[in-house]
Image 1 (cartoon, protein in one colour):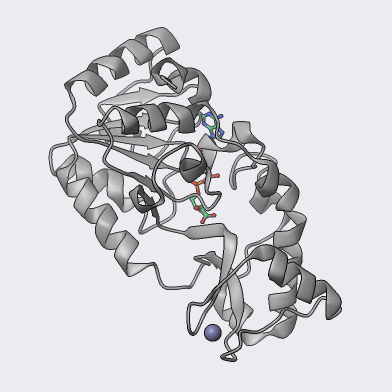
Image 2: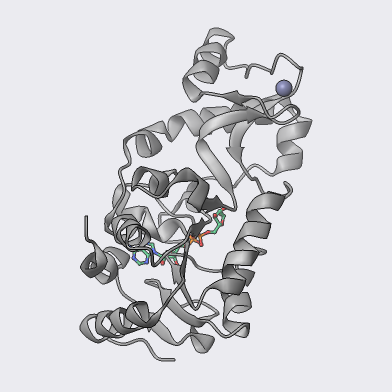
Length: 253
Ligand code: APR
Ligand code: ZN
């Protein structure tokens, strides 16, 4: 499918949204770039500056755990101030209108929750960076608590009372995907009639498998992304435009 211009695309998306009974938005970092959070693979994105710390390296080395926390606190300027963008607000409007049962996201920035989608209806495939948890007993820890102890101990991360390591509640490369979130995302992909992939390069599996799963099952597939993706060919509509521009017409808050 060839991309079309903004006006034509938005009109077509309006028709697909109107016809749909159950829309499944699937979001990636591109929906949050207008909120000040850089994505990963655009020029100037996060992965240009630092390589991600794989889970085994985090577990194997206190130095890597300290580095992971240093990086997280360095990002607080981005994550702490971020507010939902036009894309988040458009999806929250469709959620409130009863067209969107839940949002599946690869993002860890909590912005879908801040936009008004109930936390139980935000399916986070890669977790959430706005709080931390023990990797053994899953006790939740707030970032301020961790930061105070990290700095007081000369940049040594605190450990849980049970002895487990404390990590942001995100899923690192090499870490097991969250089983409940994956199962919920599969069920949503299997029951939606319109799947909208928004702001994702669709290169990280298993998350990238969801658009294909929905399309194979007969759902219409829309891709909203500035750059081409490997799934454009099978999409019913490709909106290669700025996400905020494309989705702003759906904001009803
Ligand atoms: N409008 C439209 N598209 C945009 C915008 C925008 N304002 N901003 C960025 N994009 C597009 C980029 O062109 C890019 O194709 O969003 C896409 C973001 O892709 P990635 O940076 O690869 O982010 P994502 O697909 O979410 O990455 C998936 O990879 O690094 C891991 O765990 C991390 O969840 C992440 C996963
Ligand atoms: Zn613990």
